[in-house]
Length: 289
Length: 89
Image 1: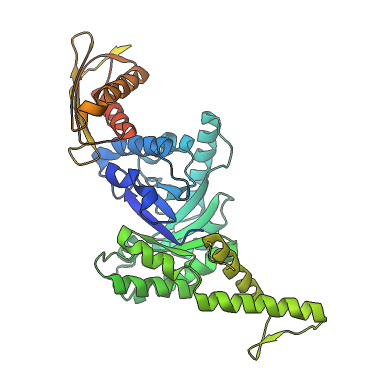
Image 2: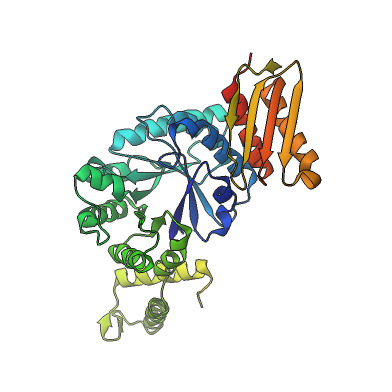
């Protein structure tokens, strides 16, 4: 479960060592945009040591490597792969071939380092117009691709439009990514809300993302995490309804009734499926019945 | 084993970090440490630094460390980065 994913600069020890206590479901050790070119070497050593020595139990670990059109990304992989991050985040994923390149190098590195083949998954960061249009190909390019994440800052630069708090300029991209990820059967996460001071705007933005079908949202500030976690957790109303649906299904099965109705509405397979998802998530969060 | 070729630095003076400066030595390891926790952890820090130098194959170096309350794994990372930047023969 990844309701919230927090970007942490890969060269900031104070944040890295406290990554487990900031409230994120997953932390993203950032070796890309948050690290200047002359600090890439030091950052990847620091991230490697942190992964090796710190206890991140209960918090997922993701490393954002540099993109495959740079001279940094292979060294990033070599340094961190052995220390088992949950996922490698591949920035600027634009087409299936980008995943193929990363996949080939990950496999080669796993063999060289003597670690399980295919053990580390990829989260593809979609932040170009080409990536949006090819999102389904990217999502299905390899069994390693476990999720897509929308990067709206780079995307809007590529689209040649302004990035706004209202986010109308990324409506299509959001819907497209959710559809592509669902069609491929993988997870999908929303872009960060970049105004650290605007708590209300952040909450509204997270609600929009949840309504569209995203599994969670990324963040650049720990301050946003509590609201994101709340928005992406089942509400009590949703949970009550999910249990009512399952009760109705059970009773109907006991009575041998074919069609089930609840509150005047027919309960069909998609409603049952959603109810099961809601209950499973609540149980994982320890708020189930 | 090897000797550091040139002066190099890594890390910062920020809290939870360490600043490391390395340079050519005079045939041995010359280590100076300034730390807010020198009293309690000075020996452990020196041991950690020597461990990294040994792993890097370096036994000829002048190294100065200013520790701002960094964890072991951070100090080790900064020492390794500085040594790699300094290069060895």
